[in-house]
Length: 456
Image (cartoon, rainbow, N blue to C red; front, side, top):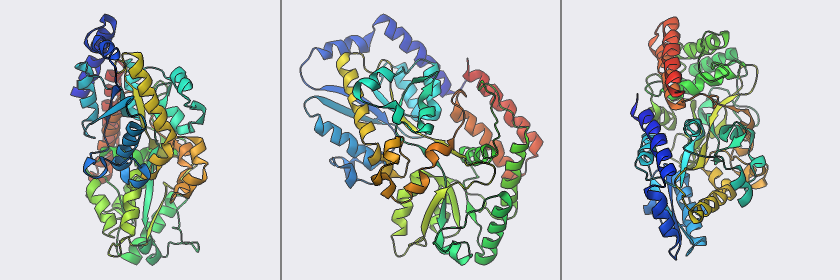
């Protein structure tokens, strides 16, 4: 059993015992509730640390990037609620974030509010570490009917809402329009020519390579298993294929849709249309260096690439464009996930702290449009339809992802581990030419074992 799974299981046991017995944090919080002064709540998040730049900024519109905007939002909330509520931010590292969160649960040091990927939420729902929020949301004015289709699916289990969706992030194509123009792959309107089938994609990649001498794509095929999974599942889902059983307890990769997706990925790599040996950092750098025409990566890089395109000495100068992952098969479908905010059970053990946490959630809901400036997509239909959101660069085109985004079904447990197990051998097939039958059998064996553990 991994450290993460052990801690998650231990957290459930420890927290259940604590709640049942009225132990430490509950009694301490009750004592605090009787004291005058502002109520203090803990907010646990990742997104980095940037207090040196934004520690005193209370205007999210004056901030840039995930860390800057979120730091400024919390500062603004604290300023508006001075003397009543103090939010204490605790920053976890992105990679081991869930291990850090689980360790805190085991130690009964439970944050009031925590950021959580929607793909991870189901594990905490099943362990009863978070609780339904529909009544609370209605009380503070958070309208769950305003959630976009993708966001609603991500936070809903058995008809109940367990988190506040904060964004939708997805798999995009980021273009170097200077190189695309050189390859003759730009429309009269100045947009990239998008392929609409695997054959069109291969033809355009060959045309690009012939005209520029460079590979069409950079994607993190090496040492980034989740990136392989996201591309692979996008191609499968576009064929109306599926890989998980309806109950989320098994995976099946022996389908025609899987074979077609792997055929395309393999052909692109074998023909030299993908720059080889790239991990996350090097694929991004290859794109910024002007070494490839298209980078496949998520929404979170939009602000950075737009900034680079403004620099006169950048290979990307005045040549940045981004689109959703093009539809190459039967239907629009793009791998997507999202960040959400959860109210941790045991983190608000008195009425004042719970009310304060819900006020913070309502504030974040109200400022979802500010967060969308990061490049992530809004989770609110009303914001997606607003003039302010549509005026943000590329957002009108990207807004379709809030309805076309697809992900691993939320009844599939331990999704981060599952993503990595799939992606490791997808990479071995595409990059190392591991025999496909052997690789697919290995994925099924390892993932099915993981799913059995995840549901116990």
